Length: 77
Image 1 (cartoon, rainbow, N blue to C red):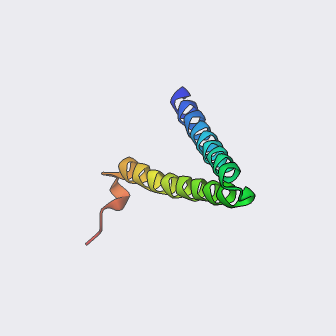
Image 2 (cartoon, helix red, strand yellow):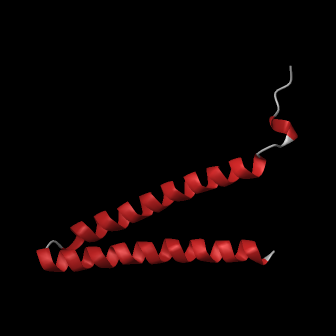
């Protein structure tokens, strides 16, 4: 039961930390280059999109592992 909680907490931390890290890097780059919202928005969106794609493919791989060998997957003749 606690294994699911641990996975959810680690995924939530990964989503939040990665997004904040990319936004902070974007703020730093914007401060150095003088282009205030450009890098912040770009890197923030890049982080969110990349994390969404990663979550989708991780979920699909987990579903495949969970359903491997299940009787409803066998084709009837």
